[in-house]
Amino acid sequence: MSPTVFREGPFRFFFFSREEERIHIHVQSADGEAKFWIEPAIELARNYQLSDQDLSRALQLVIEHEQEIKDAWQRHFGR
Image (tube, rainbow, N blue to C red):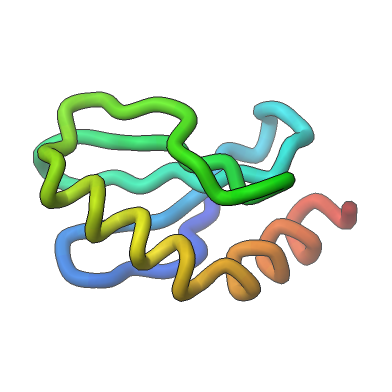
C-alpha cells in the first residue's frame, strides 16, 4: 500500500506502508522518483533519474507541505 499524500503538477507525493519508521516522503513523476527525509531535517535521501530542475521543485514542494506530510504520516502510521 502506498497512500498518496498530495499531487502537484507532474508529481505524486506518497509513502509506502511497510517501510522504515523515520518520517520520509517519496515523490514520483513520469521521469523518475526521489525520496526525502522529513525529520530530523528535510533532506534528499535518494534520487532516481529526476532532473536537477524537477528535484529542486520537488524539494520546494516538500518544504511547503511539510506539516501536511507529517499529519498524513501520523494518521496513517499512528506515530
